[in-house]
Length: 328
Image (cartoon, rainbow, N blue to C red):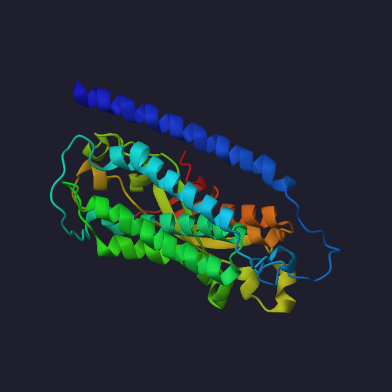
């Protein structure tokens, strides 16, 4: 009876999350075309698709740090940390299970190590958010990227210290490093030429209730731990790799992505859980050349999400999906 009830709860949770994801995707389809995009007649400026769209518009640069704004960023940070611990992480990790003394644990088996990519992705989000905050407070571009990366690293250290007292977890230096490196990805994307040709992305859609029906969800798990339904992507931008003369024959927005996920055996405790590898078409939103600072920020954040597209699963089995991660 308890098992059936757990399954029903998991199914209900998955339906609600899928509905929210649908609403989010619909919002993108309606809002994004209205963003301020350049026209073909625009002069070749920093907005040209051959230039780094992340390079700062000179009119945006304000190197004077504003103490009140910096204090505002710090205050919002503390509020966000408190809310995260109180409403998400406390329930998701070890609520009502009791703690234990601080200890270390480097688990290389959990979720077939896909959780390391999850920590990396969360570091990216934190890094991007704090970069905008520090820039708003008046820090220089380089300072903002540096401080944002350090803030992401400090955040993951704080999270793992809490893990260090959990009965089923422990402080993991590899989790901290994954999140910290993710926090510096925005900086790498700005200054390292290689990142003009690739993007790192994430997608999520509930196709399996394995996590929500498992013991991991017994104390109120969070969707960020549902690695069965997550896919992490490396997206390549062929347009930017082509010679100038060949670019007119290839759509600037069309990218190709390789994705990594895991099957539900990780949470159903069946033997031999496996990783899954996907190859998919992708959309390079940077190709739309955003002009305004807000439009650039919107594109920058949306480009971390792998939107539904035709996809082929190439390992361990062969499948074709019209709009993966939605499977139907």
